[in-house]
Structures are given as C-alpha cells and as structure tokens.
Image (cartoon, rainbow, N blue to C red; front, side, top):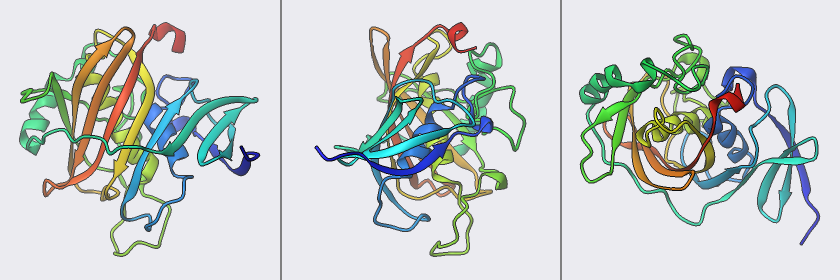
Length: 260
C-alpha cells in the first residue's frame, strides 16, 4: 500500500447541515465525491461513486482529504469522517411519476406534522425558500416498489455550481447539491417518520447536473430493512422526464436527541 497522497481540504458550511450540528449526509458525501477524478466536464456526467460516512460531518472546519489507493478519505482531528471511491455498480432507477402527482404528494409529507431534523438542508421544514432545498416528499402509488415518496424541486440560483467550462450557457446546480437532492427522499420512503435515521452509505450516479430554475421530480423507494439498517433508492428526473441522477442508500436508525 502506498502512503496516502494529500489533497485539498473539504469544508461543509453550516448552511448545508442536516441535524443542527453536522452536515447533511448527501451534501457532505457529494462534496467528497467531487474530489475524485472524472472523465467529463462539470456540466455533464459523473461516474457512480460510493461514499461511506464514518461519523457526523462537522461544520465549518477543514476536513483533510487524502488519496489512499484510489479511495479518498476525509478526516477531522485524526479520525475518518467519510470515504469515497468509484462504485462497483450503478444504482438502480426508481420508476417515474408525473410532476402533478409529485406536487400533490407534497401535501402528504410526514415532516409537515413532525420532523426529527427540521434544520435539514434537503428536507427541513425550518428552512426558508432559497436557503434549503425544501424537498417535501409524500407517499405516491408504490407500483413495483415496497413504498415510494415523491416531490418536486426547482434548483434556486444560489445553488449554482461555481464552474464555467460547461458545454452550454445554462447554469447548473453543484454536484454536492445534486447529491443532497437525492438524499432524504430515500429516508422518507423508508419510513423516516417512524424510524428516524441518518445516512450511512450512499452510491450516486450523476448523468447531468440539474438546471437552475427548472422544475424536477425526485422519487424515493424503500428497498427493505435489516436491524437498524434501512435500504432505499432515489431517482431525479428533469422537466422532460429524463433521468438526471440516481442513488442507493443505507440508513442507520438513530435517536434524534443524540444529534441535537
């Protein structure tokens, strides 16, 4: 094994929290995934990447990142926070629903009644429009899945990728934001209201970064439970019904009070 090669640090700003004192799992995972080499420009596709979170990502501090034989490891105070590597498989897609159905489902969002992490950047009800994503997934017809939840999402201009080598003039949401959009919808499909959980592992494939100002539909599906673990999947569709990105998750059931 070669010695770890140091890379530039990753910082999770407090805006991108999940629980009040730690990073949203999807955003944090996507920020580390962005440090891996990729073969295309930022406006187009990224390979499937698997990120495992080893502890709640701390906010507003530098996480040292090192390349350990192709796995990028982010650490704080000498302890691993997350590990990212190119995935050994592509995540399966969740079947689509129309924007009207997804919009109607938002009124059934369980988080509107009670939410274990109302500050969450992706799905928190305490976040204002233009600050958090405000993705509020409600139940939709299951189809061939165990359970599904869906919502609409229109990326805000403040979420634009700070990158200017696109192949077109369209602004896109950043890679970490795209991972965040694929995050919590899985937890709510997996019964987050009854089983509060945090992200353990996420595998995501990004076909195209979401277009700023365009309405998207994000759908989550339950894929089973085993002890404290919950398995889910999610897919993000654009306004024309094309797949933008897909993900699979492993969640860990927790006591929300431990993350207050």
